[in-house]
Amino acid sequence: MKLLEFLKRERKKSASVAKERLQIIVAHQRGHRGQPDYMPMLEQELLEVIRRYVSVDQEAVNITLDSEDDCSILELNVTLPNSKDS
Amino acid sequence: MAKIIVVTSGKGGVGKTTSAAAIATGLALRGNKTIVIDFDVGLRNLDLIMGCERRVVYDLVNVIQGEATLNQATIRDKRTENLYILPASQTRDKDALTPEGVERILSELKEEFDFIICDSPAGIERGAQLAMYYADEAIVVTNPEVSSVRDSDRILGLLSSKTRRAEQGNDPVREHLLITRYNPERVDHGDMLNLDDITEILSIKLIGLIPESEAVLRASNQGVPVTHDNSSDAGQAYADTVSRLLGEEVTLRFHQAQKKGFLSRIFGGRR
Ligand SMILES: Nc1ncnc2c1ncn2[C@@H]1O[C@H](COP(=O)(O)OP(=O)(O)OP(=O)(O)O)[C@@H](O)[C@H]1O
Ligand SMILES: [Mg+2]
Image 1 (tube, chains in turn brown, green):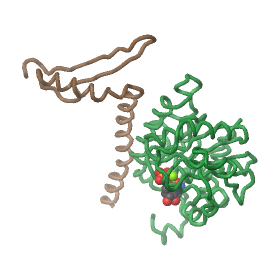
Image 2 (cartoon, protein in one colour; image 1 turned 90 degrees about the vertical axis):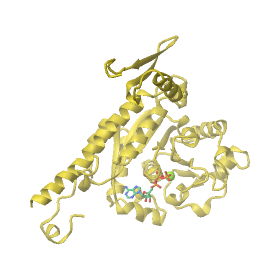
Image 3 (spheres, rainbow over the protein chains, first blue to last red; image 1 turned 45 degrees about the vertical axis):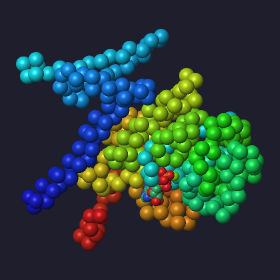
Image 4 (spheres, chains in turn purple, brown; image 1 turned 90 degrees about the horizontal axis):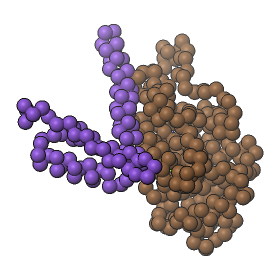
């Protein structure tokens, strides 16, 4: 009986894991919606440039492109590691 | 003037063609003059689902290239009045479809029909984009599965940017979610995404829910759209979907597991 319940609980998880994963995936996709095709390349190259100076991982760099009426604003956010650690 | 509705999904094999055929049939049965167009050039199978494969002479590409007229290529459904099929080419390469050609055909058909249903190929590339480009509404077919939901979200992104309505700044394409191959038992067991989770993640309005059903394979074996099997769960679920598409309020069915009787609980397995 215990085992059965345990198995059941394990199963319950798979659909909710799927949901959590999807929420993250979809949020990420929507962040990139409608952006120009060169953005992923630009993001990658900027990351490489930054890495020549500080060691950061992929998530530390966040690039967004906002468009207003007559211009677009490229915003680059880099979370640098604590200076003590580097 | 016809309403153009694309049936699309991103991911392959989720039930676009099954749904396009069933919905077009349902619309025609309700008295709407309807044509269903196969946009899956090179991999056509709408004609098989509609059971008219032996009557295909000309196809979409022939019409675009001026080798046949629309009248010659359009097949009139044998079972259902008001229903027509425009098949895709079996042999040509995908580039044979041009935006100008598609626009010309659609605007000609728009005069004559109430509904134009476009069965999109899988993917998010050219073929899928062409199928959705001129749409007024979109039915996004989604299975309760991570990859399918993700692809549906990508399709929603395309619908809001890569369609004529988006490019010309008109009212956006109306998006409907159609969940297919839903298995309430597995949802209850917690190993299938449930319908609320899917609608919440994609945040578009649900137009229908089609259960995983043996009737679908039976229908495709026979070449008779499942809507005609009106004693089956899937047939009824598609009929409900059509009613909602026509603006009626219909309560959702087939989203809950059947309560097992005493005997089947003892003798029948859980699955
Ligand atoms: N509700 C359902 N229950 C059971 N089987 C289904 C259901 N809907 C679709 N199928 C099956 O899934 C398979 C794929 O269906 P279909 O050809 O309609 O998908 P599709 O999205 O058009 O595929 P493609 O991307 O290749 O064009 C078929 O074998 C079909 O019988
Ligand atoms: Mg198909």
